[in-house]
Length: 178
Ligand code: NI
Image (tube, rainbow, N blue to C red):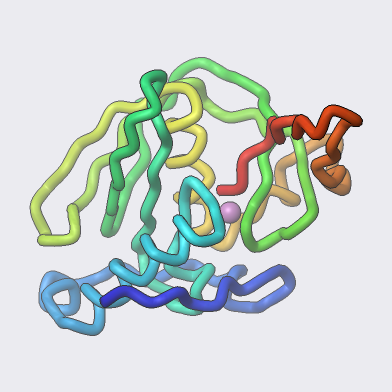
């Protein structure tokens, strides 16, 4: 079973700590495996496309992500002790964060990157990402270092609520909560 956990919001001090590395032994513990299941459940329920362990009050270097591709296919990623390398290009886009509800900002990040680390079973993984997936990975890695988008965003503003027009059609939100 997976359970929704409470998402901490700024200014909770755990969000500002540099999270600790996870040991191989620790990763095998049921407590850690439950945390990962719960993080995925909490991310989907939010809804968000990424979630880092400090956001649910655990200062460990773990994040999860799931960004739909062009065909709408979703694939959950779990990274333990992730390291972001091979940052290339630059792109500015609007981001939101589950720990900063109602806030949006424009953040410049690398257009592509590589994440290396472990999967949830401690196997070495290496994932190349570009676009929104790369943005999501960089955002989550920042969470593990205690960095929030308000530290690096420009044009920080309140999100405007989704409105309905007279025909009842909803305008799609263009921002993403990571
Ligand atoms: Ni976030």
